[in-house]
Length: 305
Image (tube, rainbow, N blue to C red; front, side, top):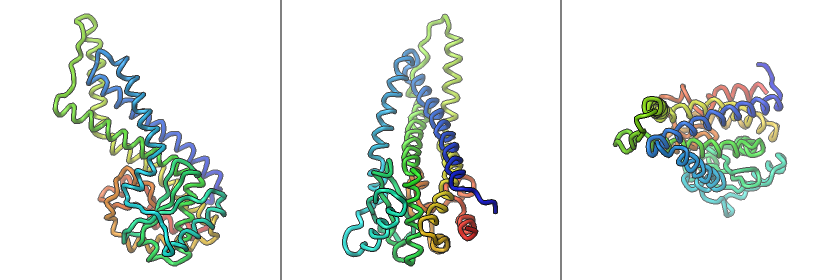
């Protein structure tokens, strides 16, 4: 297997992140324009900027407080008390090794073995593990998983993934508005004068048609785009995690245990499933647009290090 340096991986991730951001921005722009034409075609020049302002406020608010929403939606609770002393100490030690501020530590009561990191930046981050992960993994395996999640924080993947979750959520909202409007006919006509009616009406029909089609396929498209970038980030976090622990077998063994233990029925929202250590949900379409690399591939790479 060809070896790639950490710096090459980081540069590759940065390029893919820029591409993903551009695609999501284009989708949001088309959907927003479609809604403007649907609801107030004669005032698009006014409605569209206002819509953009509202979306900017939504994005900023979600970016600032999105991690709290994620923690709440997953039922995470603070890892407090003597029961979690080793967990907190492990996170602190690995944080020092990674050169980052110690994140807050949370636990989810679940028999599934999983973990994730969230937050808008390394200074405002949290690490979450399931109770099943702590019960089933030994010390080296648990540290391998924690090192992986802390690598996401150090590499600023948490910042990017938070923005992805915000964008995917916004696209879902806009798509739903468009589809419901078409379904119930809750949008206005073109309202054009006879002069220029054909030209303006034609443009509006094209925009509405593109918006309608995009609204149908946007959830699938955004999932595919997530898949294209998330896989490389998971590989990078695996490698960075090994750099912290100096023991690749710990993480490889943890992945194997998870592969044979998890049922994939965590019922986690697809908008945030990409932030988990392994995909918390399983479906027939995972082979097409899974956000995580196959566990077998990850184990193979780890044992080749």
